[in-house]
Image (cartoon, rainbow, N blue to C red):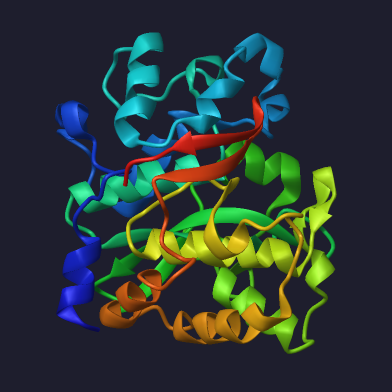
Length: 300
């Protein structure tokens, strides 16, 4: 493994840097499983609030899911409960987020304690009893020095989600066929080994190769420590209509997916991100769960 790669993912970027709230990370546990438990006591998934006996109307905080940066997430948490982060909040007092926020906060904590980490966009198979269903998802990936390999961790799967949804996967070490990073999903679909219409968000009926393309760009950005929201679109993913797939761009995207297949060459990851249509611009299009389609300025 390249020392430069591990050093790169050992430090926080704009979205994961706790900034003015760095002091809150003092005393964090050093074990990954304990950090996962800490994250699970701070965030509640907007799509799973019912599993905890709540409704979004009771939380009345759906707009929190558009928070992009760790300081803003921590600000919201402190406003409700000023205790130290390892102390679990009641479900109604947690930050109302998405899978990306679990991954982002865990990634931030891991980097803070010196463990190389990055968030990955892709598709999970373990939320459905249908083995051919690939649900849009985001997890954290960290480097385990003892095992000398990257491990995929899904902090989103806490004991409540695991028991009530029926997740059987090991959330602390997901198999690569349980969570497909976006580049592998794209390659499977393009090779005809998986139906592209099996990839997406089944609950709202959006799916297809165009959706995998968006996940591919989000994963590339995250590999460059630009951790966008799951509903952000720009460049090659931002087409009108959104599901347009220009034929001339397909070989370019095939090459990108191939380049990201291993995700262990830092120079290749950074070179790919710098290409036209891939780098996150200052203004992007976002499909906010609360506000709908909006244009928003970002700073990464």
